[in-house]
Image (cartoon, rainbow, N blue to C red; front, side):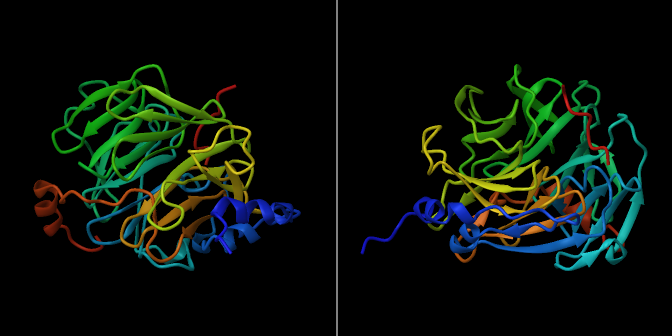
Length: 335
């Protein structure tokens, strides 16, 4: 018998995808998600705010840096599951500079970068959670808007900014505008560094990273937000989508809108899903929820999100050797 495609498996199981959400929701894999080889664990729990910790970065020390609007702290955790806020290796208080001061973060070349939503300066994070502005960008009046991601081919930052979609060289402190007319929410970059996927006005859109041209618009429903591209295995090229309605979807970008095989729910029963962040050390994807950070894995020979292929910038690598130690409302929605 010919082996069914992943989306055919999902369609067969489609009637069992959704469960009634209890008062205290817990993100769970659907039968389709399990059949496709995904696993889901809890990285850190214990948050309690309208928005959970939006995104994470993996420091050169191998620790996980994340923000919390719950108490205006940058936390640093070991990269292991089953933790709570009290498990943090360190925490650093920060001031709200935008009036909407949760963080978008990403990892590039073993370094963590990010900005507070809707107008924050782009920062470089040390392994202990402290941070300093990326040189030159503040003087150029470039600020963060929402999502930011790593281009794995050159360790540039692909960011939603006050100037639209931009490509930032964080070491040189320079940038170019990719597309000045779009201001997306969650974004990701394909592993080959050619395509950006982004949430725009309730849809997922794909853009050519070099030219900024719109490639396609996907109407998937479920209030999509953070996205991450699968690399390797039978799901290569599929896009994981973290949704505001407490579900996680899987998009086949080769399918047309309206095709029942284009989009399937692989997890549900969650709280509000928001940004996602790749853990390049093990190929998993952090999923932001209101109350926790979950971790999604697609199994052997498969990863989700960017993999750092370029070497770590020498300047930051040398600076890291001198470090001592380990070293909310996220935004007001438009409309």
